Length: 223
Image (cartoon, rainbow, N blue to C red):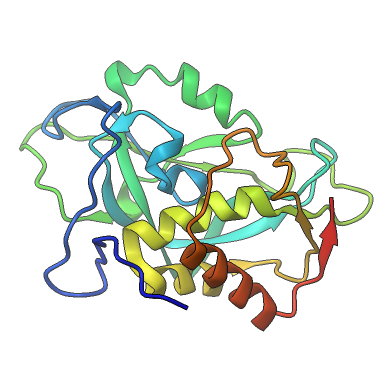
């Protein structure tokens, strides 16, 4: 597999560099009272949203898992409290606390203020506390699916493309390591993506994802 050429920001290493934000993004200075979200899935891929500037961050005491609900015919990635676990992600501002669009996108989730759990390298102005929210699906929020629902490969591709760009292969590996539920079958919908924000992957990105799914011995089922 060829080398990844993107500049990456990795808080687990020294002297990180930051990737270039989406040029169409809405630029909001960090030194404001706008609230922020912490994204740990598709929101890590800057090409799926307009919120900026986005900054790498970590959520301490959280872990991801694939949740199976009667709400959808596919598994939903969520974050749940998990003492001792740290996950990578991005934070970005929500201008004027206008959560409507983001809440609509994340309608299956509860928005939870997790400011004390979020570590980031950004300087905050004194006297201006900033809320940082994380979207989560408690086990009791939706009826459970009668049987396990598959993971959409088109969604997983978008998530891991984001992690590869922001944190490099080591960060993408940490995504796998800090996410539970990989016994779930993977629905291969790459040819006709079911995820509405699907993106085209590079050959290196595709190979990285396919290699890791093979190592996990994931069951790949046709769409």
